[in-house]
Image (cartoon, rainbow, N blue to C red):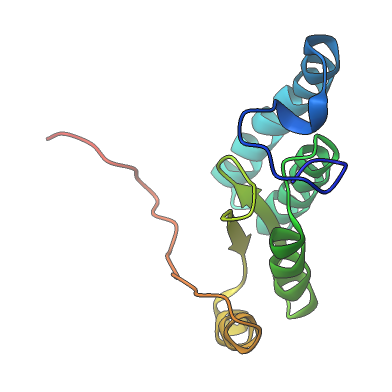
Length: 131
């Protein structure tokens, strides 16, 4: 959906011009650096706050949808440290949430009760690598 409430896969986010998108992404770049530093230090609350901030930014670009906003709100209201859309957004979007282990069941149950599917995962200390 765009700011006018219409989903148009062929339209750039919310009809923004190149200059508007560039301004958003210029602000977005430092978040990536801060998030990486917080991840490396295990500062999960900071990571969650940065996820929330990123979600606000991409929502302002018009790439979210009512379903994504609902899922983010449910995650946050049931204890997620942060939640944001992932991927291109739109009506079939994906939300990723960061939560402490003990909050995961409540978040999953709450999402399931309102019709969302969940796929829990854990962060690994090392990514994929070749030996």
